[in-house]
Length: 507
Image (cartoon, rainbow, N blue to C red; front, side, top):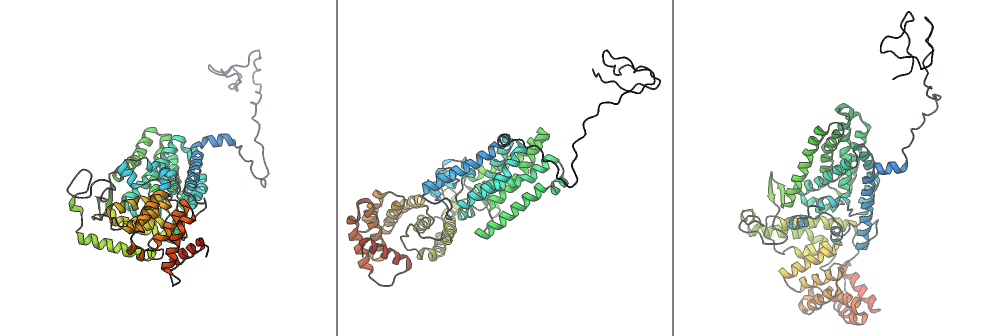
């Protein structure tokens, strides 16, 4: 019961039934007497107009971290994975060369053949924590550190994780379905995809929280998100000369997913329904890619022969139908065109490329050419090893040594010969696997006719022997290489090898 006295009605009578009683032990006021004023609340402290308003009290560092614990855990995971990848690849963390494919795959990066042939669908999600380039890791740390904690504090940890993983994985799957060659060419870290998913979700969260389109448009959060999306898209376009379907798809999926998850804070049923639509779309996209399909010419088509298993032929459960194959003439034409595109870059680095000394432009061109050649190999053609040698050399330029070694061994099986064996020995040396490299190169250098065309096999056989057994074992091969080439004019890549052989011989 309220023990505060109320004003009596006119005439000085007692309060009507239900009115407040005077405090216990207190006398009734005389008729007509004025009641004492109710106790006043202390007036808020005033400050001069020219003084800034006092800052609200901070919730504290620990509480702030706990409210965004998933965001900070994601940031830490990306840092740890990137340092581990860089350590395994033997490169600097600020290098401008993408990390080798085989290294990032070991730590969960997305790879189409792993998803399709091995059913590793979880790579769509784990790849969001793998940066393939120091610049991508730096962008993630700068941008996501601003965006992620804000979103998590609004949505809560569980909803935030659903948004991050759902929109990010959906962006990867959408890019694979629309044009997988672009992802292969860019070789971009998928942490950037996660950043775009978070930025795309911000306007959706504002809309789900306010329920007003006009308020969302006017919100500085929306303007900030749209500005960041536009700025980074333009900046990355000038850097790599391509639009990235994965990042734009992640931003597009983040918008409805952010809306649905924020709406569920006010209306659980409506929010769950709104969130289910983009999540189902993500699951469908992942399923289509996992089945080896892509969208081309207005329909879903098979991406080509499996990386393992039977070649295309009559309709089977694990191979495309024969009707999807082109004629042998068309296949030969496609192979010749792809080989011609790669000729200029490969000729600058020789038939057995060295391990180092490539510019960033070389790396980017090699990635683009690998995408073109892979489209021919995985497309509707019976292409059985014709482009493997070129692809091995391009992988070496990109420092994908494990992938180069795997493909070189496959090429040797399909088309055995001294050059295929020399490529297998070279990539085994870079892997490194000195025993296998020594065996392959020793057998390749037995062919005198081959050595007239590719004398570099002698040089690299010498390098393997020097690393395995010392300079005395390698000297005769260096001498043969130098003697065969003499002092004539050589292209830059060959001149560098000759000079290195002479230096090792002490000349």
